[in-house]
Length: 146
View 1 (cartoon, helix red, strand yellow):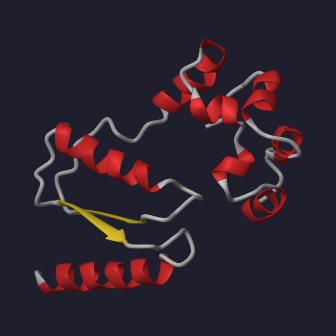
View 2 (view 1 turned 180 degrees about the vertical axis):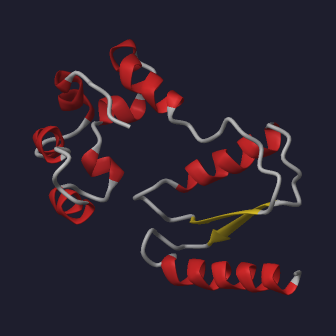
């Protein structure tokens, strides 16, 4: 979904040189690979410490509200859900998955269907093969239950 966000806000959320790039690269023409080639995959490098350390600051309220509107945590899974994450991931923090897991449990999802698998000492890249193995094992198990 597209939002008409104040570009001055983008300049405060992203570090340079990425702030200017973000303003220009999301143009509806560039594909994912083109966008990724212009950005950085490390959150601490991409995102301003001012936003990262205090996203609830009043000056960031617009973007925080949009994040809340786009949250995927307002439902309760009723069939098996497999959450997998490397605990050394700095691209997408591991804590995001832990928070998601806990939110689903708080919302009333049966604990036996929310499966959290942690790949010890794995980051966004080294966790990929263990993820594939875990995913295939889960699929095979589900297939065997038919």
